[in-house]
Image 1 (cartoon, rainbow, N blue to C red):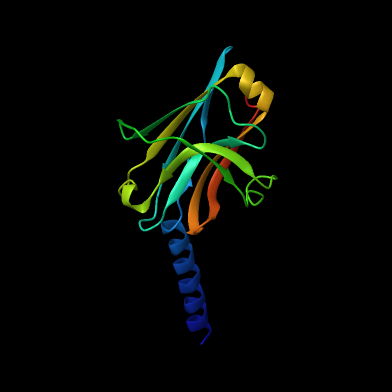
Image 2 (cartoon, one colour; image 1 turned 90 degrees about the vertical axis):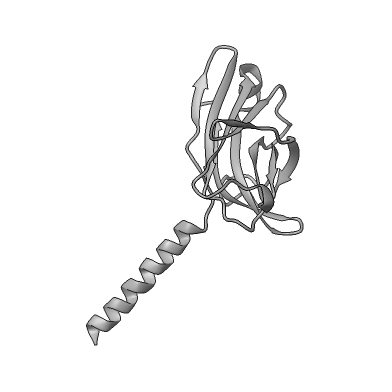
Length: 162
């Protein structure tokens, strides 16, 4: 009887951990390059779940980022998507802020990368602007309702990194 309970417990734990890994979009740790005139970083987004809409981008808690350049690629192919600004609420779970003003991109479910493919985002910001802002937030958010988006993964880069 004890062995049966132990096997049932282990089966539940393994199943829950596998499901959690399969159904969650993620981003890689940003690779930062800081120079005297600008900072740039690249991060990769992967494991998009089909049937969902996503937003990804970079933002701050105050003003829009001035002079920002963003390049998106899928593998070696550049993506030409229109950049948009949006406010990402419900940010306190990842960052100790309530809302982030993000400049980024919408990926509706019909335009998601295929299984095993990654979207790379390279961001370049003038050094003076990065210094003025102090903190940058990289996010990928999933839509859960008409106006409800939750951050699924995120990273912060701040002036201690550059």
